[in-house]
Image (cartoon, rainbow over the protein chains, first blue to last red):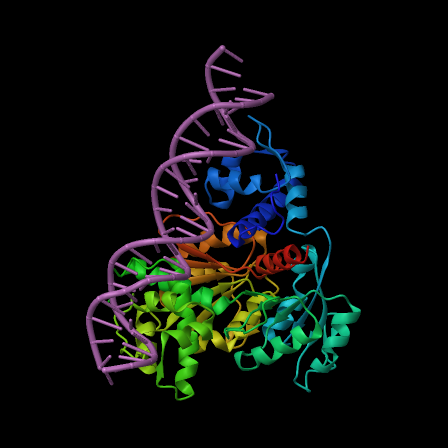
Length: 212
Length: 212
DNA sequence: TAGATTGTTAATCGATTAACAATC
DNA sequence: TAGATTGTTAATCGATTAACAATC
């Protein structure tokens, strides 16, 4: 039973995404029922956590059988707002930026990169897939015309804040920050940090602490 | 005062990495002292949290002045095991894998990609920067000879588990998993998940929940 | 029926924040 | 000195886990 639309803690959202990822695949294998025990094992969590998380959804399981996979996938999709497509723009046409633009996983999940921007004049006009790299002065126009919800920041740390400001001014509601600089944003803007370099630091540190 | 080398909770490690990232830059600007208040503001946390985290280090601040930036950077570097370089291999020479290999940020932080591997025969032999893409049969030899600690997995979900098994068998101690599949690993192996697609889902979901 | 599994409440655990004495 | 800041303890907050009645 869904209590309050706005009351999902971030850890719950992250885990629901995990369940969705696994169950979507399980569904294609023809799996029709799954218990909290099995799902917990598959994603590396406890039964209790899985049941608590699923209780947030507008959805019920069946005693002794578990959860119907197809319906659970649908409920997750709805709750995670993955039913509609989501348009995004990306700033920074370096190696990482280009790789993300060309990556098919995002489209498959309903995220469409509708514009790629870079302040480097030498890159402007070049193609990345079907998109042409544009100057940031075109940002606002694209965000308005193409109904863009989110911006991805894949520029060097030094220009991250400037780019964030321009994206917000252009009208996006959320930022995915791939660079290591801390962003300062107004309250109504959501920022999620996705930093491979910091994740690698964390991994290295954890491993070395254990071995010491 | 450092109580127990092995007792750092993951959230603390992540925040210490953040402080390190910011302070390293502040140091190059010539900043010599910083208070918990200022550092907290710069990285978006509370004073209390900053002071608690720093109390984990083998390091002391000075009343009324705060913390000496250069010494704090050194203490963080030591605690986070960033004093020595760390050798890694990467499996999956697709767009993302190549972009990471070519990215300079990792080297700057002391992470050296010493080998790139792909099971695709058409890619083997080609160059990515100074590295030549190799077959996975060469994995074990590279890990042993080049003193490799970590493996980065940048392959499609379907082959992630197989690749993880091979990396573990080759002798790495930790895995950075960039793909969405859940990995099953023995207890002595550390896995950190770094998933742009899931971060993007989280961002989209959070934004849409707020706007609804 | 007996056994298994859900849904939910209560208990535990851990992390963050607040408060304040000590200090310069 | 007065004011500011550290270091640390205690209080709060929230998330995870355990337990168990209800159910099929």
